[in-house]
Length: 217
Image 1: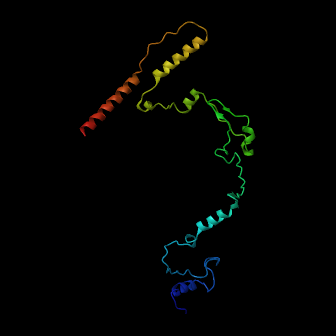
Image 2: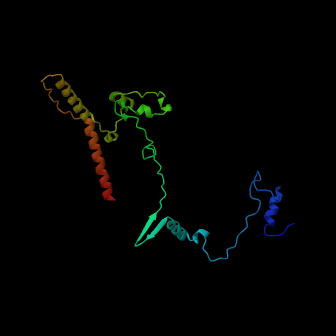
């Protein structure tokens, strides 16, 4: 039996069927020789490479000097530089910023207006017919949402009945003016919704209680 620092590891591998010269792994495609530590005796720091000690600046100077041509004549010195012409890569407009975006149309509340060139820039898979979204009126949308609105005070019981009545009155006046009639519809006296008043009083009382508790603390 071989002796050495790798005796234990060798014996453990041989226990599971490993033989000398075989690679590690199921397919035996791993390393064959063990990883051996390397000793460092120089005074260079970690990560030291030969590139750090190479005279790259000297090589750059020599390459730049080769491109200079000095012509000395009587009383004058001419220096010419030989430049290599490098062709610039022409960038297509698709590579530039936002070049890959395709303007398909302008979405409005009623319809979508598409530019004339939108059909030319579409891909083949965009030509598939998709199901159209049904257009709902304001009343149908209100009923579909279960009567919910984005009014923040609605959570406290406040309704917009007064505002809705005023808007309805304004619509009637506009329709009456468009019909060509000169009669003016008199404004109805503003009826105060008792539910709005009661809910407002409830909120005020709630705020007063909250202030009292904060002052007591």
